[in-house]
Amino acid sequence: MIAGRVPATAFVIASLVVACVTSPTPSRTLAGSPTAGAVATIDPAEGWQLASLPDGSRAVMFSDVVAGPDGFLVAGGGGPIGNTPIILHSQDGQSWSSEPISGSFAAPFGLVTVGARVFAAGGGETNRCAHPAALTTWARDISGGWQEAPFDDMFCAGIGNVTMFEFDSHIVLAGAGTGDQPFYMTSEDGLRWTDAGPNPFGDIYPRAFLAFDKDLWIFGSAPAGVPVVVHRTAGKPFGPPVAIAGLAADSDLIAAMWLDGPVVVASAGRATGILRPDGTGSWVGIPAVGLPPDQIAGIHVVNGHLVALGATEADMPEAWTSADGANWRSVVLPEQAVTGSGFTGVAVIGGTAVLVGQRDAPNGSGAVGAIWTGPASLLAP
Image 1 (tube, helix red, strand yellow):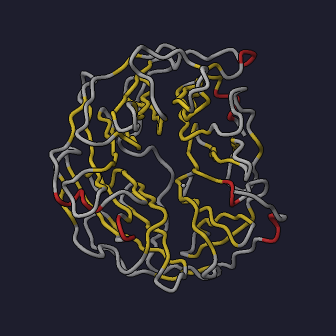
Image 2: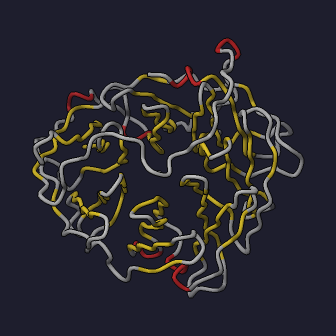
């Protein structure tokens, strides 16, 4: 979630009126945001440092990292095929320990922090569904132990474009699974889930979700490929899909984040731009200079700015940072960032940043999960 560039000025999005989107509320801290204590700042001269991991935590890949209520949490998968769950915890980003977690058939691929709780979503192969793939979730207790959700037939939605987030006092698991079928599930505890039913937000393919306070936006594409947005206010039904004027059917909706208001990253051809509300119910687009659209794997909000992770066509890892989504610069990466390695997540607490992903195994046996720690200033715009 990779090659060629044209000047970003070639990307132009006309002003668009989205009737179903309410005016964004003023920026404020999202309920349930991480409350981890401050971490000592690392000397910038040290750069990125490869973390030493505890015994038994060898992972095929680390898939995500979040700022939890008591430090950094990293999720990944180990074992012969990477489906053995692994969760690592660190208060400072340097000393890591394993947390107890087990899984019936899958490892976690995503984490979300909600107040003092942390939840994980994952997927893998199982014979419990008509097709071989299914979802599962976990919830973390205050002692650092994890419990997997009881299997439910709704998890047979399958692995695909899946996102977990908090909205309307619930944990939400949503996206498009097997056969590109959209789904939307809610839970109060991250373990027992309620399915919203078929086509919960209309006949669209969801590509990006953005939840903030009482508003949820789902950006996706209609059957004809036209980019659309669906809005929902907490406690109310989904509104109808509304076409995003100025984005043609060949446009791609890459990501949506809250950065002093909604920011949507989209591409047209080989140029990238961002959409922001103009305060009157309309959206306007401007170029995203320095961000190649076909090289982006994911975009994250860290320390009040954006960090994008990706790779070149030659599979060389890359990263970019931006204060506003409009102007981007390259990030200096760890020395182990060579062809075939990659980054899947980034998080910051205080002055410390953590990158997770994969690198070549020291013994040449293949790729293994890796964690790097460095000063947060390395990611500053």
